[in-house]
Amino acid sequence: MKTIAHIHTDFPTKFGIPRQSGIIASLQGKIVFEPEYRIPEAVRGLEDFSHIWLLWEFSEAVRDNWSPTVRPPRLGGNVRKGVFATRSPFRPNPIGLSSVRLEKVEFEPNIGPVLYVSGADLMDGTPIYDIKPYIAYTDSHPDAVSGFASTPAEFLLEVDFPESLLQKVPENQRKSLIDVLAHDPRPQYQDDPERVYGMAFGGMEVKFKVDGMQLTVLEVKSDT
Image 1 (cartoon, rainbow, N blue to C red):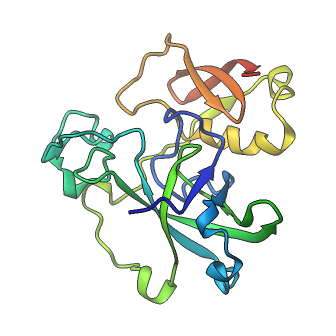
Image 2 (cartoon, rainbow, N blue to C red; image 1 turned 180 degrees about the horizontal axis):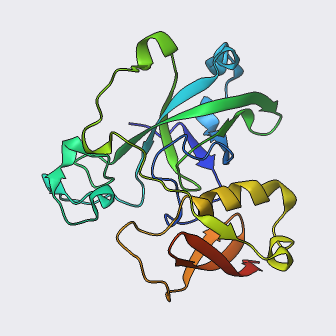
């Protein structure tokens, strides 16, 4: 397996990354190919598709051993399910699969074709193994049954973002950041109203608390 590209997103760490692709459509990503694959002909026709599949490596979850069962956060971390019945990153082969919207394909002189996508659930710098077009008539299954994940887990939080702190966020990142916070970036099994959480996002460190269904932003500071 060869790494063909890397994706660049606003998440330098795992904390806060959406639990599935497509949940937060406002999140933007940029896919840059490795030098060997910076060939315009390799993406010819891709711009005709609205969505693509990304096959990628859980680069922060590579390990030498594996367990046949895992504890899905969706079930509170207290119930074990078979690893192949979950989307846990801790797998025999650390391979991820995401469906994202392809916003545009641009050609840049120094790095070749660049794919701009939205709705990605990947950490900044994640290695990409392959890219395939999403084909609606075969890839979409409206009557599919989804086991313990049959309904959306997210209940949107009310985000209290003081204007003085919001002004510290670049305007083009405000909606994405608020959307991420509203979807509750905490581990699903944590519920301490006094705990202060810190999340790295787009060159910023954002600190917040959650009490019930309200998230309050406490601090925003630049990483630089």
